[in-house]
Amino acid sequence: MKEKEIEDLIADKSFETDIFNKADKIRKENFGDGVHLRALIEFSNYCSRNCLYCGLRRDNNKLKRYRMSSKEILSCAKKAFDMGFKTVVLQSGEDLFFKTKDLCDIVYKIKRDYGLRVTLSAGVLKKSDYSDLKNSGVDRYLLKFETSDKKLYEYLKPDSVFGDRLKAIEILKELNYQTGSGIMAGLPGQNDKILAKDLKLIKNMELDMVSVGPFISDPDTPLKNYSTIEESKMIKILALTRILSPFSHMPATTSMGVLYPNGRKKALLAGANVLMPDITPGIYGENYRIYPGKNIKDPEDNVNEIKDMLSSISRHISYEFGDSIRGGFYGKNS
Ligand code: 5AD
Ligand code: SF4
Image (tube, helix red, strand yellow):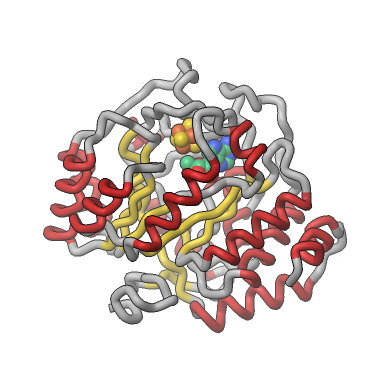
């Protein structure tokens, strides 16, 4: 698909059944009806950066900051293991407090004691840090590029350089991480032309994991007055992403669920095959406020709700590792 064609499809307001059917067919052919659950542990909400859209930005002094101790992170990983999860995602702001060595130690223990796949999402780091973390056992890394428009990127992330982000994603791939990236859709200033370019870049990156979620305006950020993308457009963007990236795992993001009724279910019907239930202890999780509206639930209730939702669309939880299907990592789901 050419960029202009993608742009026209995004701009077109009509409901195109074709696109959804195609996305759903690709999802079914490549991933089947099993949905992978990745248990999310938000281990620190400190952030040294000041992204305009994000509630964790350093200038947001309304947020109560926390860091989980190594012990707390490990007990959360044990909980994930006991509940039958196969992957934990360790996510934080760009917190300079955690040294790579500390993270390596935590990851090493999670792998040794529970044999879980570990995904890390902790922002841009030096190549040597990515390398040490890989050697300690991190399997996957998530680093969204957020938008492919350099000017918009650097406006929204005033202390970041777009090229550094792309370089970091390249390094992750070079180091043989299962690499995830993606964007937010509906960012202020992101028109359909930019969105088409975003999707094309996602495709060209040949990612193992792709995340596309709606921007949600947070009242404690400079973007407090901006509106969000309309539901039908958002879902079409997800379907197009699936068509353009047929072999990438794709989550139905929490932000979809926060913004639209049955949002995650709709995403699963438009190509998504992954869910990321939050298992961060409530006293912390409620302060991991990237955007408002996150509903803190008990992890067991969360999974029960997911089971019901999946059975209503003839899908089910997969208990495989859900590694990249691009190959070159461990063989298929070994
Ligand atoms: N709305 C939606 N997603 C957001 N993120 C950050 N702020 C917002 C927001 N206001 C997402 C970004 C980032 C991740 C930490 O959370 O995509 O990569
Ligand atoms: Fe920090 Fe990431 Fe939020 Fe930016 S998007 S303020 S780097 S947590």
